Amino acid sequence: MKVLVINCGSSSIKYELYEAETGQALAKGIVGCIGEKNSFIRQDTRGREIRRQVSVSNHGESFELIFENLTNRQNGVLRDISEISAVGHRAVHGADTFIESTLINEDVIRKLEECILLAPLHNPPNLLGIQESRKILPSIPHVAVFDTAFHQTMPPKTYLYPLPGEYYQSFKVRRYGFHGTSCRYVSQKAASALGKPLEELRMIICHLGNGVTVTAVDGGKSLDTSMGLTPLEGPMMGTRSGDIDAGVIFFLHRQVGLSVDHIDNILNRESGLLAVSTVSNNMEEITEEAKKGNEHCQLAMEMFVYRVKKYIGAYAAALEGLESLVFTAGIGENSPIIRAMICEGLEFLGLKLDKAINKDTLGVERIISSSDSRVSIVVVPTNEELMIFYDTLKVAGLNP
Image (cartoon, helix red, strand yellow):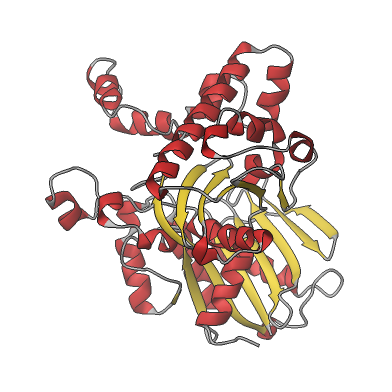
């Protein structure tokens, strides 16, 4: 049995094919720049990468290309697409309608469409991926795995905004949180690395990538998380501002004359590390420029670290204690300097970093706290696709 995992965006489709019995990834790839002149497909099959320029004008053509690649006689891993037993789909926003991964049917699709207003950039391409793949594979189970589902354990004091109640009751305006699939995977792996039951751990997970989430996890359940109704809230990110005074929006509109759409674009695509560094939204590039003395890049790093540290302090208080601090995602897994800057000054919480181990840890699972640290510091590479695979097996009833 084979399970295909799909992460469908507006201009790209990422995919990964798993062997159900072993959990081994047989192939992974991406169709990128869909509808553009420079569209391409890249597929890694057991360590052999194939990339070629292709002409794909829409998602339907992209899915046909994916299945063509997977069944290619020379570089594919399937004799026929009938070997695929189920498809798992990443779904970004399930509001409070979906509290767990769900078998897709017409009713689920209708409810996903109702969530579009809450995630206009993410849910439409997710739905498109579901619809196009169901056309090609209509007779097998398709499963939706929601980024927001993990955070449905948050209590009302955490997820409600202090707004008039009608905005939640009528329009579902509340904190939902994102990166939940990553948090679920990472929390389980961190507990395993520490050799302790997840149910006994209070941990803070720092998912630091182009998008940034800090999450308080109590006994394996989300207590609080930094992203809110949308992925804009929280620490500063690659191109997102993160937390700002909401009054800034009114000022930019009334005094500067910017439209709401213009402000939306600024806060989501022109702010964060990109705006402060004036160089890039990529932390690796910013770090290199900071080493050369670029003051804008140095400030960007300091601001990024400061805002993450504020959340760590707040969530340590919310958890009423802490057993583990976990770093994951692109920056969290691969930037020893950012991890060190975040941990510096947090000794009062019981954190003590092993500087040598931290410096040598890049993209691998490892405990990087010193032996006498009261709170464990752990690096865990995230793997959302694997989590989607496991959920798809379970929901589709395919557990080998």
